[in-house]
Length: 153
Image (cartoon, rainbow, N blue to C red; front, side, top):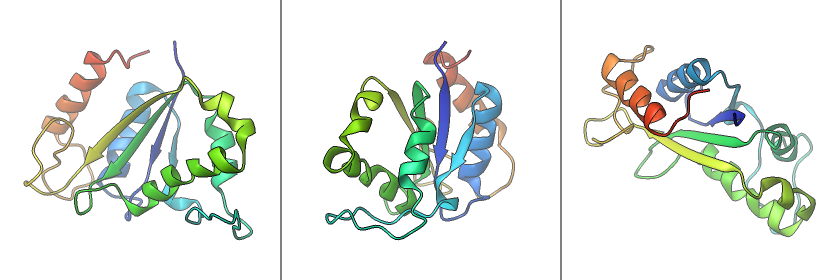
């Protein structure tokens, strides 16, 4: 059975995205990381990052997992800035840290998005307002997606 880790990032670390991440962590028996709680600078073409930049440490932490589940809210039709920084930093691996490339090849990667507006309707892309509990309709969508894609242990 593949091992999984949930990586989520939002402007609100205790918001809707975190609620979904916590639910997924429980259902899939997987750890989760709030990327927003980790200091990561945007990609630097000069490979110049401040002390305490957590990207490489986070990358090393997730490498042992077979599948990475990315979870982000949709802001202005795109992922959160925090998630974008994390994904952009894969350029570090391509340019400056090729030793990590073999460990990334073959990883399963899933993306899930959430929104709190009625404008976005579709599978796993609806929330229905800012609340601190998973609504039954959203839970049913997530459970159906998990079952359909054989996410269960």
